[in-house]
Image: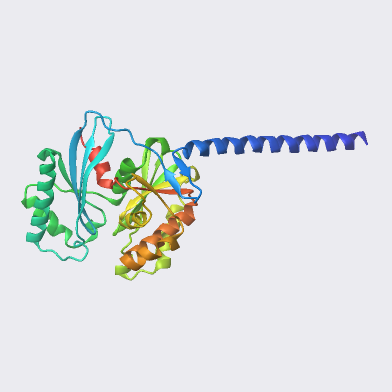
Length: 320
């Protein structure tokens, strides 16, 4: 009888000890989550605000980049300092003409000259202007004609692989304080890039872009591929995500209330039915990609950055 009573006491003690340990772990996780989300304020309407403020550059210099993407030319000018703190000073998005091959060589040169002149007029030195061809645009036949036009004008064109693009996107988008708890998404027209920090390396993954419908690829095939690739990310990096790209831009535009740098996206894709109605198939396909990433990662928050672009990450890697 005494042995039986001792056994009961022992079991109760062990059970209490396990419960106590679990409580400590949960409290620790809660504290960690509180730190991660300290930049967010949840209002009564349950709409989150991301209040993080990047460090302003000190004694910086102007740098410019022209991106040839799968949907046209874009240009960005930043003020950046020796510590790679940066702020956007000017951004310009071009017309969609690359994927549709609707431009001849003369039109290409004229568009480039316009972009270059605008950058110079803004105060950027000629040797601080760079040109980048995205991995998505590299898959488009007309790209070689555009590269030839740039070379003829005396400019060096930097080809970027999908993995490099993912790495550059992370450098531009992800604040250092979130490197251990977040990942980055870049939904482009030609491909989608997903990146995260693993120890001292940036890992970049590539999957379908938002214009997969042009190749008559089924939504489920794309969803399954995106879902499977997202599932390879470490669990500790899935607390929240940062996102850029053309489709996320349209999504954020429908939610933005002012001129905030960051907009927290609603993960429910039915929120963007009106955007799909206005913008069409590309947005619908982008939302399919967005949904797959969210359902695979179960991330808490998706933050869109209005100023970042992978080409800015490229600029940050250039000698100061």
